[in-house]
Length: 185
Image (tube, rainbow, N blue to C red):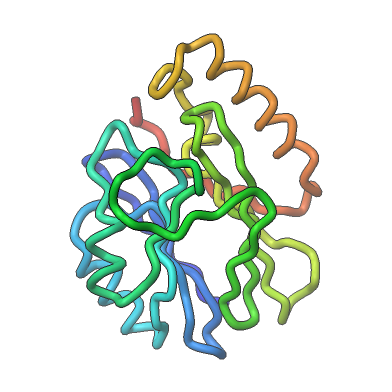
């Protein structure tokens, strides 16, 4: 499996490119900034981008998910109930996105926003158990996501608490890859 992390300073966010090197297919999660960054990285690793996934509708910065999906000829993916007018591939809890030998399971984790998802990633060349979870803004370095962005803070906090309990049930060996780092709001 190929995994590349992109640290952004404006906004303070983390994006990921990952996928199956053997089958040359990958996905980009929560892209920000210049789409060429991801296209160049995919080209350098020999991967075709099949999916561009936004873990949620970003309130603190402009996502380049849709333009990247168009430039790469990929599907733009959001939670099925996301309130977005433009077309996208809607996914639900438990849906699987295949990437060759890599399996991506969608976990609906509302709280930061109602449509938020995390992505449980398995590299089947290593094992049948999941290797890592991409948490978007449910979990960040040293923090959890804000809860008042798309609902009231109390309702968001209740949803986030349930989502955190769900993530806590993942095996201890699952690596946690957050969606933001120190310095984020």
